[in-house]
Length: 258
Image 1 (cartoon, rainbow, N blue to C red):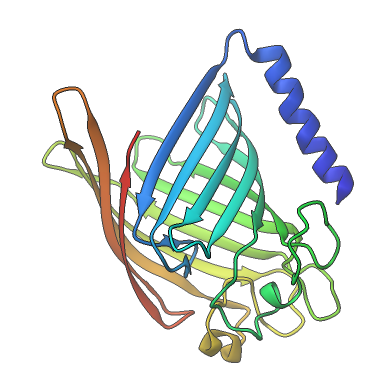
Image 2: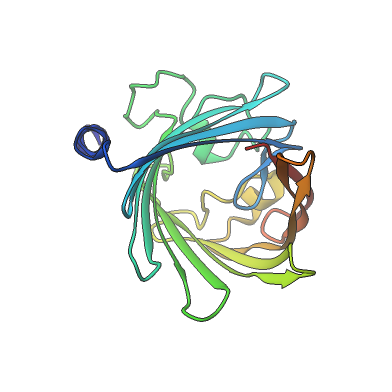
């Protein structure tokens, strides 16, 4: 694990040193009514999120962090990604959450990390490493996304890695020139689960079901730019999503400030 972290960090540093003259820095910030992630509102209160990145050609390195306005949910992540000219994107995220959760106390994904030492990458870590591939089919608006947790706190009872994975398909429709409607569906599964559970089972009911494969999300999102002044606009989005796996229905609202 330490070798993985060292490799990622050195990659970030070397990318910034050798490419800063011709690369591009970027910064975004957004507000959300809650933070919903892959099947569950992991941050149930309103949050503010920020992302800072550096991009050189197809390579991007950056950090994403979110903070619940109630002071409970806290998350800071590092990532590196590469996008080819053909639109294939590969990313590795180090996701670190140091919140107090309302998820099921029996859920193994949270029962094995009771401390918040950022530099602990052992079996009790709060980190997990998410490796993903994204692709938009040529001449279509069909987006495909596949990820797997390859290290960190996604573990079986014997501390072995579960490799919980997530597959999502979405399609973008443009309506009235500037409104985008995106229906989507996702499934969650594990490649090595000893009790048929996965990382994506957040509720007591889902934990009791202990399914190694299930429909994680069926949802729709609508987004559009909203003009505030002659020189400033925000991007607003709203949607609703059901999680058959977690037996939940969630309404979502967000605004990208810049």
